[in-house]
Length: 278
Image (cartoon, rainbow, N blue to C red; front, side):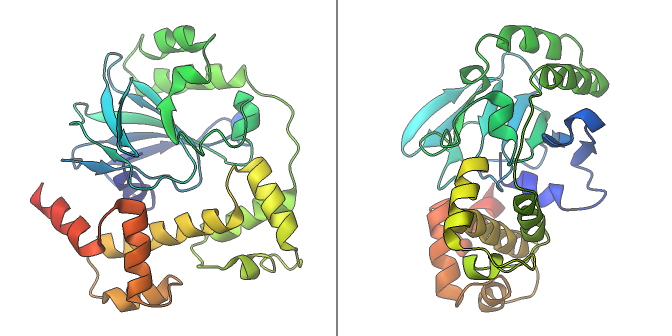
């Protein structure tokens, strides 16, 4: 998703985003349905993921976007999947649509729901939805775009996902750890291993994060730390770069700059200057 999505998703009563809760039957699988208005998306858009895989459907069935994926320009259709650790990935084309419909999945159950391998995002963090639902894609696509109302889109998505529900078993402690990270705390892996009152060894964390979430605990914490720092910088607060870095668990401002370059390909200063010009 464009990284702006995460700015809006964390802001109560934001005019750019509407959240619709999933039905009870889907709550182990779907965190929420979102209608994301795109008026503030201009120029190249950095794509990012916060650890929760998403399916995004554009407003029009024939819409397409161009994604720069590690130097390769890829044409993505009207419905795409995004997840894992995204670094320096940009949308290179204008987003000629007024809104996105976003399904945000719980990371622990996403892979079971679609019967796909947990490492699917390692080499391809953004790809067409048809690649994982080949047999059902046409039926779902036709149903989803047969009516423009939000209520119909939610109903179509709910019906489609309900057919895929399967029995899942996962450690409750892992869900508690994800919720703990969601509260915005900047943690190290060592701190995470003690976060819920139970001392966990690294091998347990590594094995279960990769099995159920598709990334290592270290990478999951890295992307959450960067996103928290990004939102702080994006809020135009009066804090210095060093203050922001220390607040979010970086050693100093150079550490934050290095991480920012890794995820966006630019320093924080250059990144936000480029945004202000568009």
